[in-house]
Image 1 (cartoon, rainbow, N blue to C red):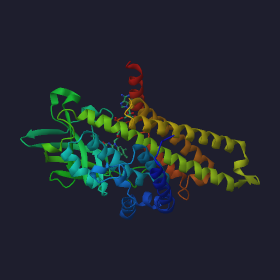
Image 2: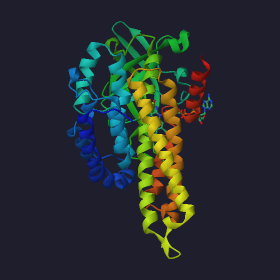
Image 3: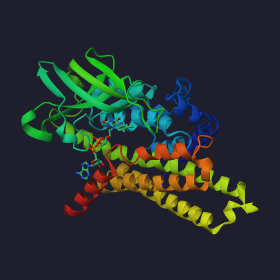
Image 4: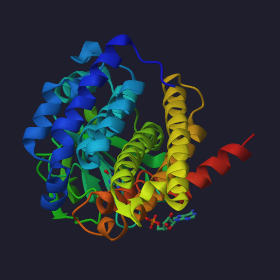
Length: 378
Ligand SMILES: Cc1cc2nc3c(=O)[nH]c(=O)nc-3n(C[C@H](O)[C@H](O)[C@H](O)COP(=O)(O)OP(=O)(O)OC[C@H]3O[C@@H](n4cnc5c(N)ncnc54)[C@H](O)[C@@H]3O)c2cc1C
């Protein structure tokens, strides 16, 4: 189990209350309106959730990665689209700046994230998804700046982000050793959102396609070193995968809790459906899978935080928990019977939301590739 401080455990109680009272009641309308309301994002700022993970020297509270993982899990119990706003800002934008950014970059961007400014991470391109090293976006050096051209797709937090971390090719002759990672402000001339991408699940999360055309980015905005950006992205995804596991865990918990409750109230053949062995066995399987999912998520978070060789564990957690989340969401819907298939209950939304966790930040096929590579490398 995660080792959290008394202060972190205390704050988590408020996060749980916030989820139950303010997030969960809005989840249906967030899905229907395809938007997380600004008022809810403001509440996350007020609760100090954006500043929680930013180090104290940059205006944050300096709480642990384990705490952040628990917060993502809790908020995902209420609404995974809302959790993704925070997860994107912290694990996808702030984390690479914290890990690899220059002092100047940290001083310019981290206090803004701490104050609630949202960021995103733009890696995927129309022709480069799983094969992240095959990106085509180019950044050509002109003295103290680079001119960037290319297209990034499926970018989460797209409409609400004030800045993005993105990668581009700076030396086409060197493959993945010719990629550099930068930070760019969303208002930079030459950066445009070319379309909103509509989805089956996490519909409240803004997903966009970004086009860069003669976009001028200062050389001082490089995250890490020139031509060493692929490492920045891979290490960012290492942390990000634990965030996805936590999101999947939250969705699965909600699906399970609601199905358990429903099974005790719904009567058929003169008795609650929970009295039937067929339903009981599903509940038993769901609860057991949830416990194992928690263990691997927290273990991966711990391993990442302790800077152990965490790649294998974070991939295992992302793959395993997202697969389990989908199994649980499917069983939960089954327990609701025909009502589960309607929009009167959240079971169908949980199933739709669950599906993305098997796909983004590396599909589960790619996680298996990573795990096998790690197993065989020694
Ligand atoms: C809602 C949403 C939000 C997203 N948010 C972001 C974001 O914020 N930033 C960002 O950069 N990206 C984001 N993505 C992109 C996401 O990470 C990619 O969609 C994902 O990595 C897969 O890439 P692809 O869609 O191009 O699929 P492809 O790479 O084309 O894969 C297609 C299929 O082939 C399989 N496959 C590919 N290679 C192999 C292999 N070697 N072995 C076995 N199977 C393989 C895949 O598993 C998959 O089943 C998001 C995507 C979605 C849908």
